[in-house]
Length: 637
Image (cartoon, rainbow, N blue to C red):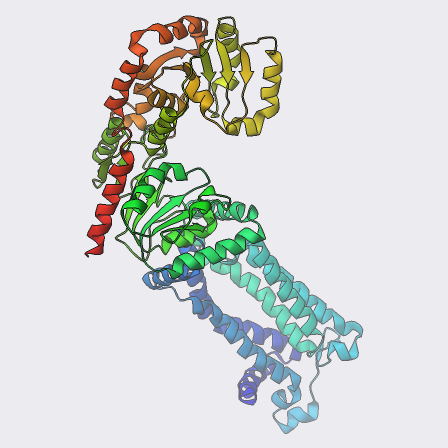
C-alpha cells in the first residue's frame, strides 16, 4: 500500500519537478498543490466547525442540566448532532488525508532519485538536492551540522500554526487553555523530534505546509466569517451557567472527606439497587427531619410502606433512626444531581424549592413521579422564595390560607398548570406547640424580653441594636439577646464586644447556647426584625411579638405582581406591633401595651393562629393520610 501511495505521489512530485526544475522548489509547489487539492475539504471543515460552535450554547446547557451523568449528556448531544446534521468525524478527514500525503512524501523524498529520475537522460544528469545551500537528502540526526536548522524551523512553524489556530480557528478558540497548550506542545514536540529522523526535504514540506495553513486559516475566516453565524453573547452566557454548576460541584466535593466519599458511593449503590421506590424524602442537612417528622412517624406506624430518606449531611442525626422500613442514605449534593435525574419513585417529598430551575431536576427515567413541596417555614411562598420557585412541583403542602391564595394567584398570573394543594399546616409549629405544652411553665420575676433577630443584611443587630438596648434596659425588664446561630458563627467577637459594653446592666444577658428552647418559650415578648421566629413564637406560645421594621427580606422583587399581601407582612400586625427604626424611642410604651392589652392576650392570639394556620396540632395526620392515599392509588396502576 505504501509503495502504491509512493508511486502516485512520485508522479505528482515528478510533474512539479519538471515544471520548476529544482528539487527544493518542487517540494514547495507540491505542498501548495496539496493545499489546493484539499481546499474543498478545508471549506467543509470550516463550515462544520462553525456549526459545532454554533451549537455550543445548547451543549453547555445540556452539560449543566445533566451535570454528572455522562450517559444522559451523550444521548442529548447525539440528538442535537442529529437534529443539526453535524458530523463529528468530518473534522478528522483532513488529518487522515494529511497522513496519507505524509506517507507519500516520506516515501518519495526518502528515495528521490527513484521517482524523479525516470529517463536515462535524467539519470545521467543526476539530481541536485541542494536548496539554498542545504542538502535536502540528509537526515539531521545522522549528519548534524547546518541540517539541524530544519527540525528547529519545523518546530517553530508548528508553534506559529498552533498560535494562529488558538487565536483564529473557530473551534480551537473555544477549547480550554489546557487543551490549547497541550496541542501546541504536542505539535512542536513531534515536529522537533521527528524532524531529526527524516530527510531534510520532509522537514521542508512540514515547514511550508504549516505556513500555508496559517494563510489558509485567515483566508477562510474572511470568506466564511464565523461571527456571521455564531451568537457569541449567548455562548458566553451559557459558559457562565455551566461554570456555576461546576463551581457548585467543586465546592461540594472539596468539603467531602475520603470516608464520606466512600460512604456516599456505597449508599448511592444501595439506593439505586432497591429499584423503584414508593416514597422518598430529601433533606438538605441535619435538623431538617423535624419538618417531615410527624408525617413520617404516622406513615411508619399505620403502614408497612418503606420510606427512603436521603440526606446531604453525613452527620445527620436521622441515621440513628434508620430501620428496615426507614432507610436512610447519605448522598452529597453533587451526587444528588445524578440520583435525582435517575429517580424511580411514586412520590418525592422535599423542602428544597427551585426544582428543575438549577442543579436539582425532575427524573429523566420516570415522568409520572409526584413531587411534593413541604415548606420548612410558614412564610410567604411568593415573596420569600425566588420567582417561579415552585412551578415544577405537582403538589404543595400549604401551611396557611395566604400561602394557598398566593399559589392560586401565581398560577393565574403566570398561566401555570393548577397544582394540587393540600391544606396541611406546619409540622414544625405543631412540634413546637407539643414541646411547649409539655414543658414547665413559670412566671418570670421580671417581664422578659427576648431579642432574636435574623442574620440577613440589614438585621437589627447590625442596624439598631444599641438604640434598642438603650431604650429597654432602663425599663424594669429582663433582656436576653439570642442571635441567629449563623450570625454567631460569623461575628462572635462583635457580639462579645457588645455584651462587654452593657455588662453594667444586671438585666442584660447574651445567650449563645442554642441547645434548649426554654428561653424562647419562657419569654414574655419576643423582639425580632423579619425573622420567621416571630410568628413561630407567637403561634407556639400565644404571646405577642414586637417587630422592628428593618429593610425587608425579599427573594422575589416582583412579589406584588400577583396581588396577594404576603403572610410575612400581614401577620406582623396580627400577632404583635411593628415599629419603624426611627421610632425606637417608643419601644418601652409598645412593650407595655403588648403585655397589658387584651388584644394580645392568649385567647386573642389563639383566634389569630386558627384563622391563618391550617390544622393546628393536626398537620401530621393530614399530611400522612394524603400521602398514604396517593401511594395506595399508585399501587393500583
